[in-house]
Image (spheres, protein in one colour):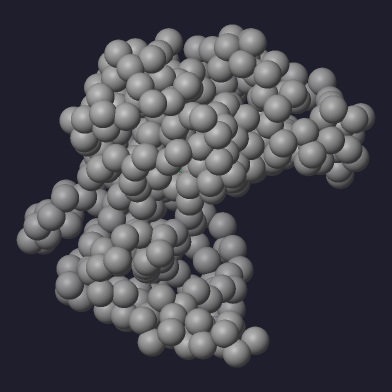
Length: 387
Ligand SMILES: Cc1ncc(COP(=O)(O)O)c(C=O)c1O
């Protein structure tokens, strides 16, 4: 216990202690803070519900319909008796969205990444991973037991240098990237990465957690927008962000999905997602397919927010996506600014190490369809006054 206490104390001193903030959801992107600073109502800039689908009437209705029809839980893992027709329908929809032969649902994005990566590569293999990849990808790499080779963030030249130097030493090689990075909001140069995957005979896995539903003519993500789908071996993503539900998926060839059903331990040994969650995801996918106006509206709001910041004198890169990082550097200062914003009705998370590299603490503004013009303008103004 002494060691744990001293570790927590170190975190307090460094301004990196993690604490839960209790919230009540008021709807339409508003939250009320419960506990410390109790009663403060805020506009939520921390949610990944980018398209505001968690509250969409169709998503709620489909979720409720399947809850009442099929019960609260799936009752077992997919390979036992938890395999429902609904899983098949959702997997077909996801395969179609991603332009792949087949899909496979996982309990969450974390479970997908820690299950798929170790299924694909092992001891005599290598994983080439972007330095800023999500923790779930890192944990998947660790579990795989393969050699993990990190390349500089979004730097295909560095990746190529490492491939040229090291690829020959390994049997199988996997390149893993995110298409939109979760904490930086920037975009992977996927065509260049796909070129290298072919040149050096690697598998390519792309985590589209923050791109699916938002980018691409049909909401198929950056792999659709960049036209590289056929070169991506495994497209992974979650239902818990723009799709407003919960769970995750991979889309791949029929053969690869069949292989994962046999080898991905987080798929095999976990209870299947429940009907209400599957119903919500199915409805969300239908909305993505039939209502492109949803993502158009989001992109307009993102542009408005960035324009307000820039017009007010903000200098610095705000990135190309709905995730807008405002870099502060020092963890304590980032926390302080987040607190001051909260007192003025704006809830934005201060993201600090080890979630992001040392010295790069930031406020992460996540724009959603809920945010109205006046809220975006006010938020930009208040933020600029604190920087
Ligand atoms: C890039 C990325 N991959 C995977 C995950 C994990 O997904 P989930 O929240 O569904 O476990 C996240 C979640 O934050 C993420 O940002």
